[in-house]
Length: 145
Image 1 (cartoon, rainbow, N blue to C red):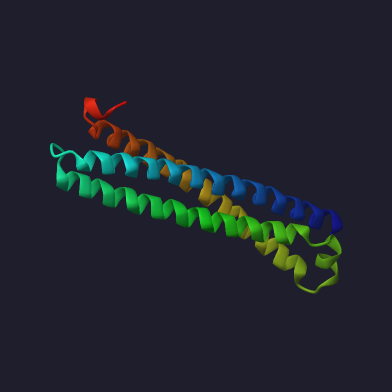
Image 2 (image 1 turned 180 degrees about the vertical axis):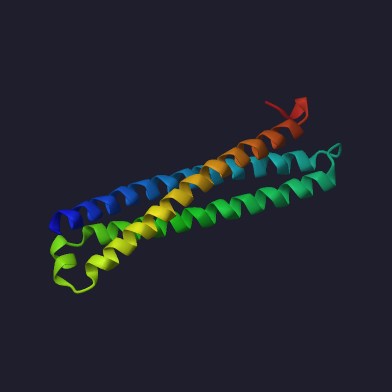
Protein backbone atom coordinates (compact mmCIF):
# COMPACT_ATOMS: atom_id res chain seq x y z
CA UNK A 1 0.00 0.00 0.00
CA UNK A 2 2.77 2.43 0.97
CA UNK A 3 4.74 1.87 -2.25
CA UNK A 4 1.55 2.25 -4.31
CA UNK A 5 0.84 5.54 -2.55
CA UNK A 6 4.40 6.70 -3.13
CA UNK A 7 4.07 5.81 -6.82
CA UNK A 8 0.84 7.84 -7.07
CA UNK A 9 2.48 10.84 -5.40
CA UNK A 10 5.36 10.61 -7.89
CA UNK A 11 2.79 10.62 -10.69
CA UNK A 12 1.30 13.80 -9.23
CA UNK A 13 4.73 15.42 -9.35
CA UNK A 14 5.15 14.36 -12.96
CA UNK A 15 1.76 15.78 -13.92
CA UNK A 16 2.60 19.02 -12.10
CA UNK A 17 5.76 19.40 -14.20
CA UNK A 18 3.99 18.53 -17.45
CA UNK A 19 1.12 20.90 -16.71
CA UNK A 20 3.58 23.69 -15.90
CA UNK A 21 5.27 23.04 -19.25
CA UNK A 22 1.85 23.20 -20.94
CA UNK A 23 1.20 26.51 -19.16
CA UNK A 24 4.50 27.91 -20.42
CA UNK A 25 3.84 26.68 -23.96
CA UNK A 26 0.37 28.21 -23.92
CA UNK A 27 1.81 31.51 -22.73
CA UNK A 28 4.46 31.46 -25.47
CA UNK A 29 1.80 30.78 -28.11
CA UNK A 30 -0.33 33.64 -26.77
CA UNK A 31 2.69 35.96 -27.08
CA UNK A 32 3.13 34.90 -30.71
CA UNK A 33 -0.51 35.72 -31.38
CA UNK A 34 -0.11 39.11 -29.69
CA UNK A 35 2.84 39.88 -31.97
CA UNK A 36 0.70 38.98 -34.97
CA UNK A 37 -2.06 41.22 -33.64
CA UNK A 38 0.42 44.11 -33.58
CA UNK A 39 1.52 43.27 -37.12
CA UNK A 40 -2.11 43.11 -38.23
CA UNK A 41 -2.78 46.52 -36.67
CA UNK A 42 -0.01 47.89 -38.88
CA UNK A 43 -1.44 46.17 -41.95
CA UNK A 44 -4.91 47.56 -41.17
CA UNK A 45 -3.50 51.12 -41.20
CA UNK A 46 -2.51 50.70 -44.85
CA UNK A 47 -5.24 52.20 -47.06
CA UNK A 48 -4.58 49.45 -49.61
CA UNK A 49 -5.49 46.71 -47.14
CA UNK A 50 -8.85 44.94 -47.11
CA UNK A 51 -10.58 46.42 -44.05
CA UNK A 52 -13.14 43.62 -43.74
CA UNK A 53 -10.43 40.96 -43.94
CA UNK A 54 -8.37 42.78 -41.31
CA UNK A 55 -11.38 42.98 -38.95
CA UNK A 56 -12.10 39.27 -39.47
CA UNK A 57 -8.45 38.38 -38.86
CA UNK A 58 -8.32 40.62 -35.77
CA UNK A 59 -11.41 38.94 -34.32
CA UNK A 60 -9.97 35.49 -35.01
CA UNK A 61 -6.63 36.39 -33.42
CA UNK A 62 -8.39 37.86 -30.39
CA UNK A 63 -10.42 34.69 -29.90
CA UNK A 64 -7.33 32.52 -30.32
CA UNK A 65 -5.39 34.59 -27.80
CA UNK A 66 -8.27 34.43 -25.29
CA UNK A 67 -8.39 30.63 -25.61
CA UNK A 68 -4.64 30.36 -25.08
CA UNK A 69 -4.73 32.62 -22.03
CA UNK A 70 -7.63 30.59 -20.61
CA UNK A 71 -5.69 27.36 -21.18
CA UNK A 72 -2.65 28.95 -19.56
CA UNK A 73 -4.69 29.75 -16.45
CA UNK A 74 -6.26 26.30 -16.31
CA UNK A 75 -2.96 24.46 -16.65
CA UNK A 76 -1.39 26.77 -14.06
CA UNK A 77 -4.16 25.96 -11.56
CA UNK A 78 -4.00 22.22 -12.28
CA UNK A 79 -0.21 22.25 -11.89
CA UNK A 80 -0.50 24.08 -8.56
CA UNK A 81 -3.10 21.57 -7.35
CA UNK A 82 -0.90 18.64 -8.34
CA UNK A 83 2.10 20.22 -6.59
CA UNK A 84 0.08 20.81 -3.43
CA UNK A 85 -1.12 17.21 -3.32
CA UNK A 86 2.36 15.86 -4.05
CA UNK A 87 3.75 17.94 -1.18
CA UNK A 88 1.55 16.19 1.38
CA UNK A 89 3.37 13.60 3.46
CA UNK A 90 2.70 9.99 2.45
CA UNK A 91 1.42 9.36 5.95
CA UNK A 92 -1.50 11.71 5.20
CA UNK A 93 -2.84 9.28 2.61
CA UNK A 94 -2.48 6.22 4.82
CA UNK A 95 -3.79 7.81 8.03
CA UNK A 96 -6.89 9.50 6.64
CA UNK A 97 -9.86 7.37 5.71
CA UNK A 98 -10.69 7.78 2.04
CA UNK A 99 -7.53 9.76 1.29
CA UNK A 100 -6.03 6.93 -0.77
CA UNK A 101 -9.17 6.81 -2.91
CA UNK A 102 -9.08 10.59 -3.26
CA UNK A 103 -5.43 10.35 -4.30
CA UNK A 104 -6.29 7.76 -6.94
CA UNK A 105 -9.12 9.96 -8.25
CA UNK A 106 -6.80 12.98 -8.34
CA UNK A 107 -4.15 11.06 -10.28
CA UNK A 108 -6.70 9.86 -12.83
CA UNK A 109 -8.17 13.35 -13.19
CA UNK A 110 -4.76 14.96 -13.60
CA UNK A 111 -3.72 12.30 -16.10
CA UNK A 112 -6.72 13.18 -18.25
CA UNK A 113 -6.22 16.93 -17.80
CA UNK A 114 -2.55 16.67 -18.74
CA UNK A 115 -3.22 14.58 -21.82
CA UNK A 116 -6.03 16.88 -22.94
CA UNK A 117 -3.94 20.02 -22.41
CA UNK A 118 -0.98 18.60 -24.32
CA UNK A 119 -3.20 17.46 -27.20
CA UNK A 120 -5.03 20.78 -27.39
CA UNK A 121 -1.79 22.72 -27.29
CA UNK A 122 -0.33 20.68 -30.14
CA UNK A 123 -3.43 21.48 -32.20
CA UNK A 124 -3.41 25.14 -31.16
CA UNK A 125 0.28 25.45 -32.02
CA UNK A 126 -0.58 24.46 -35.58
CA UNK A 127 -3.42 27.00 -35.68
CA UNK A 128 -1.13 29.71 -34.29
CA UNK A 129 1.54 28.93 -36.89
CA UNK A 130 -1.01 29.12 -39.70
CA UNK A 131 -2.68 32.28 -38.37
CA UNK A 132 0.61 34.08 -37.78
CA UNK A 133 1.84 33.00 -41.19
CA UNK A 134 -1.34 34.33 -42.81
CA UNK A 135 -0.91 37.69 -41.08
CA UNK A 136 2.69 37.90 -42.28
CA UNK A 137 1.53 37.19 -45.83
CA UNK A 138 -0.93 40.09 -45.60
CA UNK A 139 1.94 42.55 -45.28
CA UNK A 140 3.02 44.30 -48.44
CA UNK A 141 6.71 44.06 -49.33
CA UNK A 142 7.23 47.68 -48.24
CA UNK A 143 5.90 46.82 -44.77
CA UNK A 144 8.32 43.95 -44.28
CA UNK A 145 11.55 44.83 -42.63
